[in-house]
Image 1 (cartoon, rainbow, N blue to C red):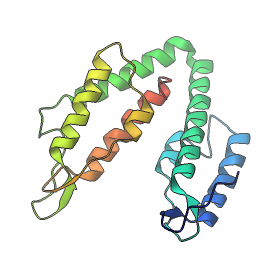
Image 2 (tube, one colour; image 1 turned 120 degrees about the vertical axis):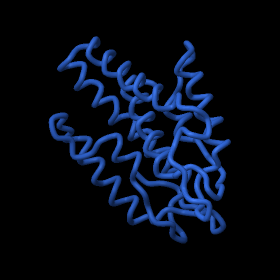
Image 3 (tube, rainbow, N blue to C red; image 1 turned 135 degrees about the horizontal axis):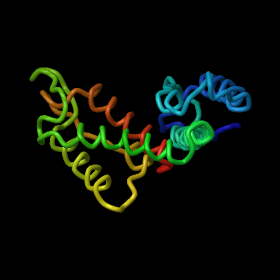
Image 4 (cartoon, rainbow, N blue to C red; image 1 turned 90 degrees about the horizontal axis):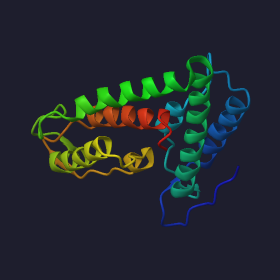
Amino acid sequence: MSFPTASRKEPAYDAGQVDAFIAEARVAYDRYNAAAPALTAGDVRRVAFDIAKHGYSTAAVDAGLERLEAALAELEREHIVMNEGWEGLSRRSRSELEALRERLARPAAKRFARVNIFTTGYRVADVDAFVDEALAGLDTSSTLRASWVRQALFRSQKGGYSENDVDVVLDQLISALLAAGQA
């Protein structure tokens, strides 16, 4: 798989790193072993590449990685269904989403650890607004999608929420939504 190169003024991913990861991912996918996967959907979500001149378009690579993540999540779901049935998958999904709902339902401005007043973190108001929307999506019949969570952007703020704490919970939410088939 080849990606388009970025224009001179656009940020770009290092083509060698992307090509190496995609080659490894292709082998891992073709030889997928649910008991001991060489690559998981979470691994794809957390991969990072250096920024380089004359590299691949970040938007194109990110879109390809999102498709790969969804494909691996589907293999993971199929494995659960084969071992535990649809009821097992449903039970797992409900349990994971309920635990996340409880985590996200903490009071506004106290949902995540804060960084000290001299350190930059995520803007509290942005994260809380996002969490409120996510909770509404979990609490209604509307389908919350992992792709929507993936696109979350937060401005920075001194003394804001810890970026790591927020990112870990959003990663868990994406995993739970993918497991529920809500890519």
